[in-house]
Image (cartoon, rainbow over all chains, first blue to last red):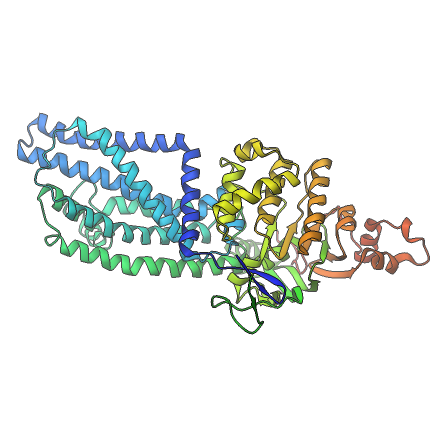
Length: 284
Length: 305
């Protein structure tokens, strides 16, 4: 509804929820249209989960480890691959916030809309998290029948709490990564993918971080994914409660408190610089 | 709708002044420059040519003009004359290096959100999510301007019908539509939000003659019905004469002449009958350039080796 000011119709400010929802609805429509790519990533994720977790079966058959150790290894690898499938989906959806607009040629029309950038990013974060949850659940549904796992001891509320709190810290990291395509139109997306690769290396996705060289192990402490994996493995494999994983939850909350507002402020500063230097054009 | 005084704010945002739709004062914009390693190495090897830190291009050079409320103002210039850069500055996508731009009294740099709520834009390239339908695209672009789904669903068929686009085409992916149909959807996107200042950046470039006439007719009708203020950039002299109340010629990043089509013709008439002078001749005589030739931006340093 508009308000008249001396004969000029000034549009009413829309509700913030509605503005964030616009981006969630758009991304949902986009992914429906790109269903073939969604199928590709689903199949790739399921195959990756199976391929890595079958290593535990190899270890069992070769006699290197037996019984409980093999069962722990199956769960260790299964959790690692599923959590990575989730985290990489969140990182992709959010870090591509500028790249996708550029590919489609819509960057100027989207960025000149009267939406505060933090609302735009919030919509993308919420979509990214929901999308990642759904995709990971499907991957688990496909992969789980291939393995015999005992989940009787799992503390699901603790695992869910770690994933929930950790998602925001990863979203904050993804917002930082999303700045790179804005600053570097030609190479930014490659740079943000390298960040993702580095997170995979140092966070203990497929192995304990203790096996890393000392200098990489030190870096693992600043990756939110390390704490997500530790917390979820503790909850699912060892039955750790929410109280038992408080250190991981505290670290992830601290990451989230720093990375999300920090990411949004840095994004705003980068956008201002891009507007100064003319980098918001569709071809960069 | 409620009345408020000019001195109040609306939801914490400054209230716009309605007397001048757009005021552009002494705007300057340059690109490039800075330290360039490749240029430095060539300079050292050759021992001459541009210094490594040169190469800054002034694309908009002290441009000033005003658009009155309810007016269609045309800016004509060759490729590279700075038209699109000017549009981007007004659209809040570029920060000017100097000067002042105000939309209904609101500063495009300091009051960006308020300005964005009042404007919309059609560019030469339709710019849509190609695999989404026109309706899905319009739903998104309408929502981010604060329209709700029922309003978008109600207005869209009406606007598309006036543009000559069948409703069924709006449900197909944009990639399935012709260039002319896509541009009609782009025009629909811009007018869907009822902007009080419309920025049309070569909106009919590349369209077939029928689509061009449909879009021009729509612009005239909507402008008349809603008293919208419009900034139109174009190469097309005939389009400028048909649509614009006043025209400015942009050359070398600067405005070299401004006036109604009649006034511009009178400036170069020198006794000739006005109806024998076409606007292309007016452009060439007043700017010293051919509209068909691409420009070098003002202030361009000598080309490096």
